[in-house]
Image 1: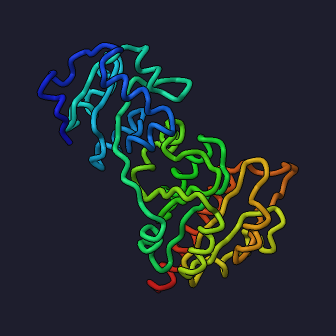
Image 2: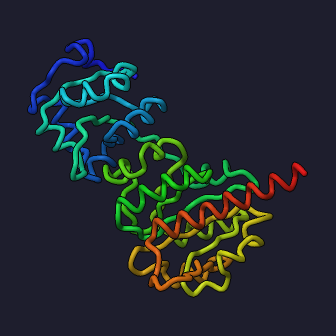
Image 3: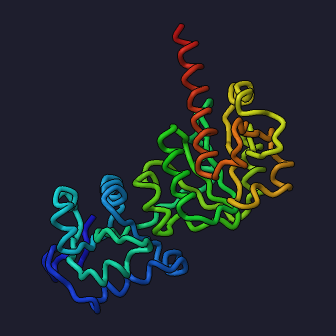
Length: 282
């Protein structure tokens, strides 16, 4: 990707904290500005590397120290690279420990119907509903990517998937698979059911144990539903699901945190696919 500003100033040259490029980028820490401009920030080596590989980076901001640490990544960038102060890097970061390497990326949204159409006949996806914590949302995106899910749907009153903390927690996986934002979780469920998905909602009161879910995981595309960290899934959503699945607690722990529960469920789908493939191979 190129930028008209590259002809006015050499890439890699230090720029002021008051430079219009910096001022514009700093606004992207606000959700409204991200929606308005169709741009967002990706911070850290993993996220920036993935963003560069997917050709969505408009420009890079890097501190002098980060330039030395990430010379290989930055050296391969086909976009303007601007050296900024530690103060600017901190302002561009939505995390406690800024890494000094931030990419301004363009949003390439995916519609729900488009994402669902790309799911293989035996594939699976993750749907998060009303998830508030950026770290949890980002971790679920990362786990979904690692387990082989075909998409992640961020539904209801969930955190913005373009939030800097979500992008950093996803460690590059936000660029590896479709991430769809949907305002209504109920509408998502309706569309999933209409497209022939088997919708599995996680719940402590689930009628199926994860240990016994092999039948529910085979013979159809699967959508896993994960709810709010404190309250779980709304009753109305549980009622719409094909099945409610519980995760057995064998020890004395009261429960699992959201990211751990999602990991177990998504990898159970991955295991089921592996077993099916091995059975077909004889």
